[in-house]
Amino acid sequence: MTYMEIVKGRYSCRSYKSDEISKEDMDYILECARLAPSACNLQPWKIYIVRDEKVKAGLCEAYPREWFAGAPVIAVFCGLKDENWKRADGADYLMCDVSVIADHFINAASDRGLGTCWIAAFDEEKAVSALKLPENEKVYVMTPLGYAADKSPALKKRKNAGDICCFI
Image (cartoon, rainbow, N blue to C red):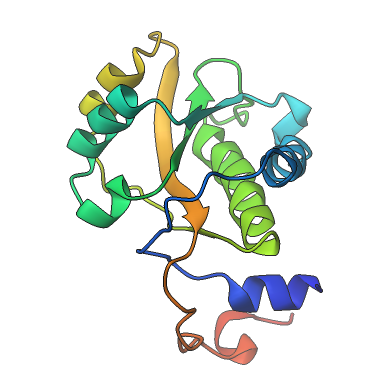
């Protein structure tokens, strides 16, 4: 599959089969994520692959949607505070770094035929509590992960390149 096919085929999946994810698929996805770039190569992140039903239930309290609970895995992407690069003016790039690794993970999952859905509108305190995170970890993104139970919808309308890019 080409990268263009991967990004065109990826969509926000909201219906999952209960099938377990194969070790080969999970290993591939995590290897692709591991290779993500970060500012100054500091790699200030941690990914939690949650299969435990009790922990998943706690994450579902943080994002209470029935379809979210139906996925066999929930991946949670955390930034490690004070381990990331900050620009000279103090701008903090932790969210940016975590977004890059989450995107690598999500696109690799799509490459393997797995569905995901980028989730950022969750109750962070409940997510932290469910995972029993240390003080230095901040949750930025969660995604359910599993084989899609539905068919991929048509590609959503996107702006043209000329509408988002300026050539100077």
